[in-house]
Image 1 (cartoon, rainbow, N blue to C red):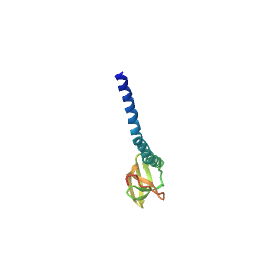
Image 2 (cartoon, helix red, strand yellow; image 1 turned 60 degrees about the vertical axis):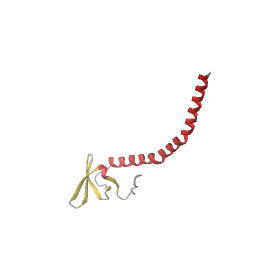
Image 3 (cartoon, rainbow, N blue to C red; image 1 turned 120 degrees about the horizontal axis):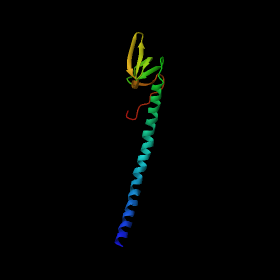
Length: 108
């Protein structure tokens, strides 16, 4: 008999634990959809932009330098900044296309 009472008490405490944890799980789910989903969307869009870079695209770097893509070499991009001025930068250094608004990241 005492064994059955102990089991019933154990099941009640487990249900109580789940009820107490429900608000925390709900907060985590809301936080996930408000914070992580938009960041993932922006990252996918940025990755797609980097894949489709081509000669002649006018871009802005993460450092705020404006230039025109002269050549794409794998993970490197050669930017023409002015006549006879070219620099090589990593593709990840490209923030976006010139003229498109650049949204600040979540950490900014």
